[in-house]
Length: 559
Image (cartoon, rainbow, N blue to C red; front, side, top):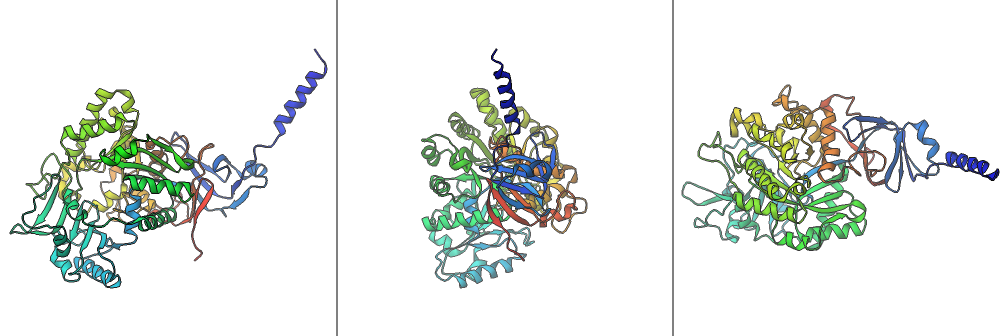
């Protein structure tokens, strides 16, 4: 052997072992960092290295500072850092549009809501349709739905259209009904209901599918309005610390808008878009195949959103037995079992994950039966799509156990429980509450919960969701100990639902949802330590900075 070779090999080995690691371009230092790993274990760190938008390493300052080189330095000043939060069920364009319309969520009475509509109409004399959302007759203690005549007092000449807080009913004035041609002879459409007075005349409220009778007359936003709405929504998502969202129901125009924003580098949240239905929009979008990891992982279009029923507050949720407070009403199933099964099968056959909205126990059972039947035909590939039930809100307890057998994700919204606790038990009675908002029951059997809010039905602020999951209380701490407290999550479980769980539900747990090496550097800095401070503080958490892919997309203005 050439005697020089061993010495050369030793020199090469020494050089390899002392070469610095690849230079980072961002060094996050002096933070109180938390992340979960894939096993759900909470890890802490004080420094993080980022290269080309992805995490290189997390650890101590002593470990990582020597590797930082000339990287941009972000000194966290001891602030708490969390992975960017992901909302597994929201409506991005709905949020953007709502931000530019009347928000009635804070109205405590019918009179306050009517006054707010009148003030908005006076301030916007050129607006052809007065629109908004967020009313809730239960909060108003009205004992009935509002009526068109009550809106007519403040806006008589222009149409008014106001969505209920759950998005499953809407309130119109007489001008809107006249434009839509609605009168006593208009029949209820399948899957919908027109509320009527004692004489059979429409009184102004339209439930579920009946809403389309009026909405068909509302001019859609033009391109400039749609772009402005998207920008408004993205700004709000960044402000509250959301770095990703599953957009539950989009059309072809919205997908095209998202692609343009991604191409221009203007998407500041990772959008997992779910096509609304399996009709014309699906056929158009699916013709080009799945859209995956588009624009540097900013956009995916590989899922479909379907509906099985309505909502509990408007008694549109489909129940196996009548409503406890309306003994002749069992809600509304939107599709026959055969129709729902055919839609699920159509999407799955094209490789699309399916998420089906189901609130009531009858709707959830119909969806479970449909998935089971499709799987019998399509086999393991269908199950591997990680199909979902959106909301999974009220179930017969025996049906909860079917989720792991079918490999389904429970896409659930913790704030729905705390928003609904003022009426849910009246709607369904004590016995059915055993299978309602049952987060602990799902977790105990190993079902993945993907946490969300259903914004703009609820606030997009994920800290409201984390707080509701942990306390099951409103923001005043009611009721003491929490509402049906046996179904609470721990904070680690809740954080997992809004990070790893939401990432897993979109087939992306290998690259987002945690701050493990190789994952996108999506993270937030917040104003206090949610793990050390009392749970009562969680909902008021302030986001100081939001980063997506190692790029800052939001910074809170100095007070």
